[in-house]
Length: 409
Image (cartoon, rainbow, N blue to C red):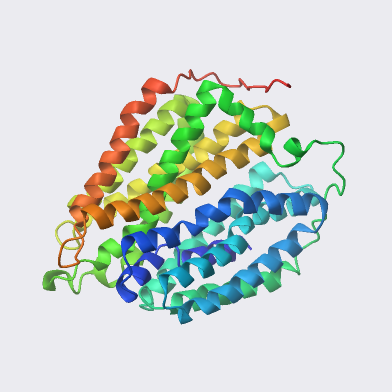
């Protein structure tokens, strides 16, 4: 389940920018709007799915239904030639796909707990297979030369249908409660956690998580498009140009390694320093892309991909652990939802749309080629600015074991 869950995403997430820019010749602002569909869906669909599996339907059945519907929509993508229509079909697809990210976790936890298996010990290795699936998808699309082809959506759609059918064979994960149990509307929809914005350190944490979430969209959206831009004769037969998605997969391999380092770094340095490490890593990630090339500068591109593991894990995974350990159990689940909304929802939307507009306005030359050196330097400058501001506004001293308990109105 975990392998196929992320294989679907990996089949198109990194290469859809190349398809839109190279194959369809759409503008960066048009692509930015298309890429924002994930953020729009992440704003509310995971919460709706959570309510449904809490009270109405088995989690494995909803997981199967969403994947089947998402797979069907992917099969329509290759027939679309308008960026506006493409936006709407991808929005429909992400409305089905984004909630499956949390549903697959719910199913895994439910099954493991029903077998009296320790989820803390056994789930991380299971989740690792998701990253393996993502890498395998990148290599599949890259080695079959489908990075600029609509076949990537057929590949993703086929696996989505397969996972959708497989989900119905999984052990039952019934709703834990079909009643509201006296909870208010605010509690039921996880809105109570928004009271954390009244606490300065949590408000700053969430806002900067959003800003780092925007940085994540920049690298996902433009990585392979950038590599396909090396059309000069000296780069034509280089590995990075022939198989850019395979090179980008170093980022996911690095991610699996840095996950293992998080407990040590988080315990030793605390969330403030960990997020600073992440911001510094984003500066290097973008800066190395700005000066690298597929020939003599290939080592810069490879190092940038390796650094991605720290850039991503040290704010995404560590941020989730910060919420888990610093916020009391009564609102922990909804607080995680707020964190994911800021990163994958608002951050994703802002990063996708604003970056497309900025590139079109400042970094597209009269001959319609792109100034990638300037693009990546501007992204590095963005990460540098937030890394300079963050330590002055995030007033937090690392105290192991301390949790914040929200006060009732």
